[in-house]
Image 1 (cartoon, rainbow, N blue to C red):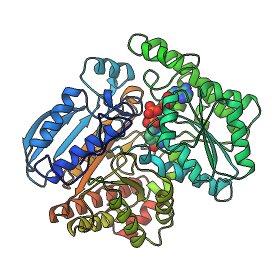
Image 2: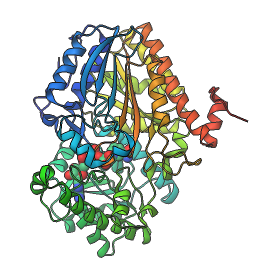
Image 3: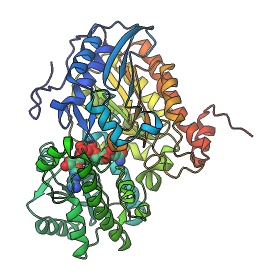
Image 4: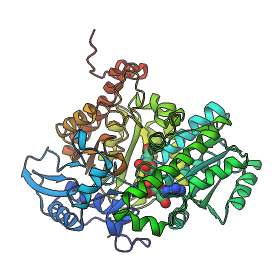
Length: 553
Ligand code: NAD
């Protein structure tokens, strides 16, 4: 039975034992599509997160996809082009059920303005990373990543945790909404600025944000008290970051950590310029795009200038993956890239071992299935401190949104081992239903994004997009259930290409084979990508885990 979804009553959370499709593989993908809308930011308009990241191109396209998933046989493959179903072809039961290409525009044309025009004509949509691939699980999808970043900084600069430390950030949207909870889990007093009161309210309602302050003075007083008492606290403030950051800097306050997760990548549909109301901005999105882009960029210049001031005064400042430095540099802030990107600064040693954000969703809709898999993780990886610490914290702090799901940073071999054990638990009936496995597109072999994932790679291979394409082709040959290639849309047009994958553990031997091949090969490619770029961690992994990387003499 689907579960009611009070925030979006038209989009219930799927679940239960009844199948509408001809098999669990098809049903699973249908439930994942339903799930991204149930936890999305604006499901009425098919928007899942990151300003314009959509689950399908239009409602007609959505209906076509649902019908195809329900009616298709296991030996067919559904083809999807930028969120629209194109057709079904006869393949075989070991082939992917769904393959997609979303928002891939030829190089010289891959610009925001071209994207907006194609979108206006109904020819394209952007799938974000996990929206169009039906893998989004709400703010929890990035929460461990955000938490790990905070903890790496804590280890380097603050003695191991963030108790008694002030973190300043902005953006309480689909992904940015993970920040207050991740900050609190790390012990910080974290202030999160968002221009939209509805976003702040939503994060508070779902348990990610504790307090909303009525004004900046009160917010700073709350943070100050928590810092003095070394008490973890998350405070939201409704305001424009391009005003609030410079004002905090003007007062001479130096937060310990500063970042930002507004949708700065998109100057039209994402970022809200200072001095403009949300209503005004929404109106201008259709017929005032040029003016809006200029105003957003001017605000981002002030926003990033304040971040650079904080950095000069000793704050740990980083770009949290939203292209804000790129926008500021285009606006004339020549030293915007003095601010490091989080991947290179904190997480690359993990990616170089293909350790990254792996996730699973309980298709039964039962939280007890996730609890059982949590136990399994603790049993299987008792020596892995990152995992054991994370699972204990996540159990205590992370509320479920939509289908019960979990994210955990696992690497080569580990993902496969876990998924195959879960498949056995599905087969034995210990879990109440099948489980779908996927990962973020921000993963070792899966993404080329020279201002985020692959910035300043050791061998200079930042902009080479062969890796995600090889990944996708390899995953199709490795029996994955859904394989997708995404490129950037909106403000990300021309900035990235990534690959996504989903595999369903339905308890069958065939699923065991699929999980084994697809997950093992996916992380093997991740190790090879970093080995090829000359990272010692990856070469160590090649040696330790017998990865068949071909090293030329
Ligand atoms: P979203 O569109 O759901 O939310 C963005 C939020 O920013 C909204 O709540 C909006 O009101 C707020 N905002 C816009 N302009 C503002 C301003 N001037 N001041 C204050 N608030 C403002 O987007 P999201 O899914 O939360 O993603 C945010 C950004 O993070 C995107 O650029 C996305 O691509 C990026 N991202 C990074 C990672 C990562 O791995 N680090 C992961 C996911 C998303």
